[in-house]
Amino acid sequence: MPVVKNNGCELSYRVFGNGSRDLVLVHGWMVSGAVYDDLIQALDSSKYRVIVPDFCGTGGTKGSLRESLAEYVDDLRAVLEDAGATSVAMAGNSMGGQIAQLFAATYPERVESLALLCTVPASGMQLPADAHELFINSGQNRDLQGTILNLACTNLSEASRERMLDDAGVISADCIQKAYLAWTGGDSTTDLGAITARTLVVGTDDPFLPHDFLKAAVAEPIPGAEFAYLPGCGHYPQVEAAAETARLLEEFFGA
Image: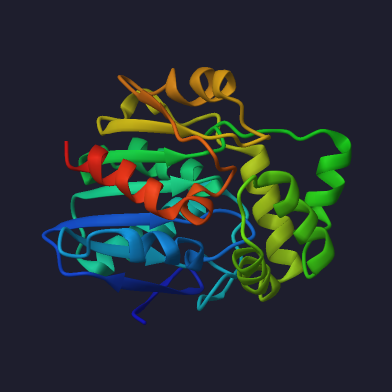
């Protein structure tokens, strides 16, 4: 895997396909870029060069942990520059959707189109006290992380669940906590009105992110953002409904 150094971290990323268009897949909290493996297999590899980073503390990436969304945005910049990706299609899920929004607002000339899958709002999202305790204390605890997946997903196979828990299990408790505080705290300073990319916000049957909330908190602040509903799956559509998610993205990015 290619590796690029940035601010004390050795960022690894993977590249798939030989298409003429760069597609960047941005992962979120408690997972690495491996959360997109099913989606990558479902995409038409002749259309895209797919770039999949692992953020600090996840997957193959090692080094200093991040405490702010701005640091994640800068790590994404470093990966794309190392990969020679100057103008991209970008998809982000959950916290990865936050990072993607902020990247597209900070570097509008670098993002042609943007798909946000069950994304956390860029401004953050505070959880109720019981959920907060579950999430922030879940690092290195397979039972608690399994509970989170059970709550968040509606169509997750047992094999996919175990694979995601294996992926989460290599992430340190410190990384889990720091990343959790980053995405719940959010970023209230970046102007999402600066996003020029054609944008699609995707909602599912995710118990945590109802459609009205996504439309108001995510779609409305982004100029011209569209909304689509993908039924029959929860917080991780790229895992729970990979083929359907791939079709939706290819239709959007190909428009």
